Length: 432
Image (tube, rainbow, N blue to C red):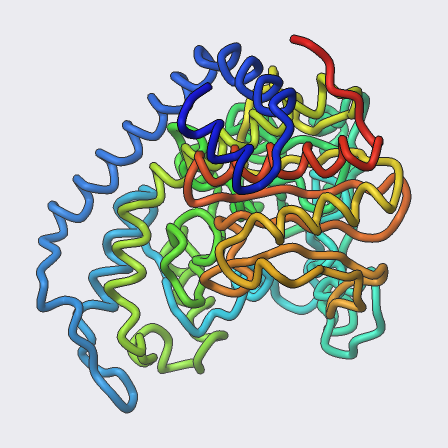
């Protein structure tokens, strides 16, 4: 028995069978873990090089007040993001309130009233459905504002129907959108190579159609980013992967200069664009979080893979499977029973460093039709790069597990959770 195992048994009353079960599965994943580490090392050097080439200085962490004129740190952040993502320009701001906000800015930067936009990755994430207007009744939705929208269902095994894209393109189609990550769906994230196949097809049909990728949860999970395979604009959140668990808030839009400028005008006002906007002293956190993000993403993916492997061995369906390629940090697990979903979120919360004494309950979360249960004992509220789990209370009761600033924390949470499920006779631990 290791010191670690003894601490588990004495302080948390963990059954030794659970510890052995997880340790045995962990040993079988070392080759896959090494591949994840290789990607993290590459991305770490890429980010370091960008910061060095942009001449990042300690004085860049100073900030201005009022309108934010002449904030050299803010400009340096955006130059670094531009270099890392290999785009023409970037908008990185703490007053972008969420990934959905960043995505909306990017989409509106392309569209003009009367334009048609098409999702080739089926129905987007729940919160974006209300932005588009396919759910809810907001007068300010894109459809109610004069834009046309349609989507292409996925085909067998949840693949993009690349051959059928041409049949959905209209004369007034100006934008194709793609969601890289799982969202609240039953598919795995699309890899860069899968996205590229669809991107190439769209450009072959009409090279003037702009392409947007929702990059939330996907940053630094592969060697390439969507911005390197022919898209025009993408967006993401700073309280997910690129924030490294340090950003209080924020998001980014990156891509073609003219589109980023339009996104900035929508965020502030025409004629103001990127020239104004306080950083509120967040430049240091944004850049330090970015610098740390490859390692944190590495640990999150390793932990997610261990979760997948463990629940597969217990007879649950996981998306992606532990053997699948990964292109985001999210793992969906089909739990089938609401009580298992509740216990799952309960013990993720109990395993957290913050608010660990609270029990999560399902509630009417803004932007969702179903009640959502959410576990997130985070240092930054809602930070999906930190250990968290959530799911809508609807059949077949998927839980969406993501994040973890440390692999060791994720492993602890898994053992704690399995121990609770075992005590409730909801799983059967097998010898591996």
